[in-house]
Image (cartoon, rainbow, N blue to C red; front, side, top):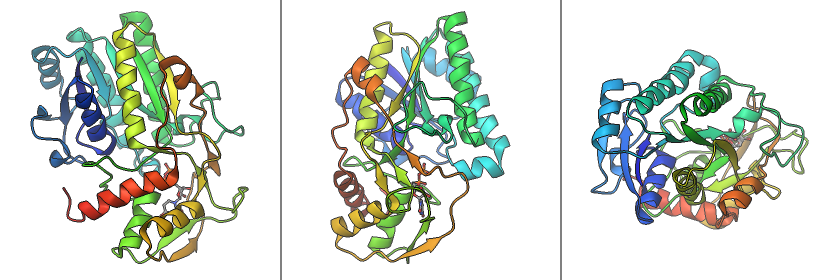
Length: 326
Ligand code: UDP
């Protein structure tokens, strides 16, 4: 399929683009490069620098490139920033998506995959979390993504625009050429790896008094290549006429605590990782673990790299290969 990937020069986006091309689809990338990296894309991947809210640009792109499906990953995604600057999140995540959907309707493109998030669930009591859990986001980031999911359900009914929302848990790891390069970095695994590499003095553990086995927060880390594979299955399902729906994407199991991540990085890298205890980070639920049974059952998706060691090894290889950014 001819697929437009917005935010395709970002961390998850660039791996999705790789995976689409690998299995024979034709990705095109739209990215404003505010956070993405042009060199995250292989040579030959058609690229347009621009904003999803630019109606004339996007409409022309959709028509000229005869796009059949859109994977929308261009968004802001930091929980803390969404609390201090919600206007940015409503404008970019909701406003940007609405403009993109208008362009799609005008160009008659009717298949859409949304990067959504576990943050749509807030702090559920029951783990693992399935898609029927209550949707009660506790921060503006989760709220903006849930809003677009709701918009999408009404657009299916009214305009026949079918969509799949993929609710990511903790994306991590790297492909051979693409990995995490955020500035500033806020995510646990790349931060701990930077400490192992000696470019950061220590890692702060945000709270060790949670009701978890070792007192630190537990998360469900999913390899970015497994995540990318799910996007391919999603557009193929929509291409076959599948209905609008949402899927969780995580590996399930028990998840991994912050301390287990630190231990794994020590074991993989062979380097010491100094840690310091710090207060809880506002808005962090104690445990977030997905049930991905629905996408496994309906699309045949399976995580193939769920061992944290495999995830950390890939991220470490990427960091070492790109200590000056690729
Ligand atoms: N975390 C931490 N120190 C850091 C960064 C993150 O202790 O420097 C913890 C954070 O509180 C959370 C977990 O690591 O419990 C994963 O955080 P991350 O920001 O990677 O992902 P999130 O779960 O917030 O999406």
